[in-house]
Image 1: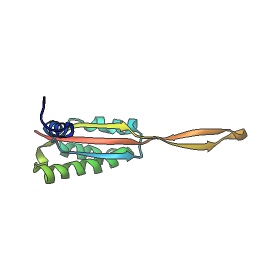
Image 2: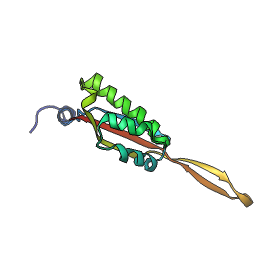
Image 3: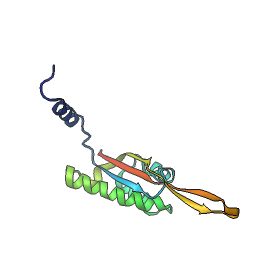
Image 4: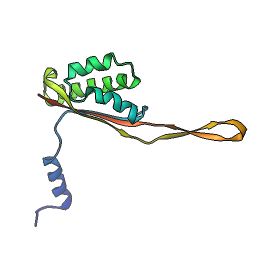
Length: 129
């Protein structure tokens, strides 16, 4: 039988398995996860400088949001983990679906159509080469 209270045992186990890679997360971004995914697919696996170049000249709206998030992840890597920005690459990046805002659009003959304003949670995880 393990020693200590159940919460202490869980806390110790979680500290051992904690992910130490630098990352940044944007919650409730006002863009659909599908549209953000197209931009994330373009930068997945690339080094940080190449990804910043891709995002800077990408015409999609999601690229400006993801560029800001990528710069935040690089700053986290430098300040919290002491990593060099030149050696970093994007190990993981994904967009999960967030709650959807539902709005009503008036239509002809008294009908009402529903408009879904989708949101997403975007995450970027970096690592060193």
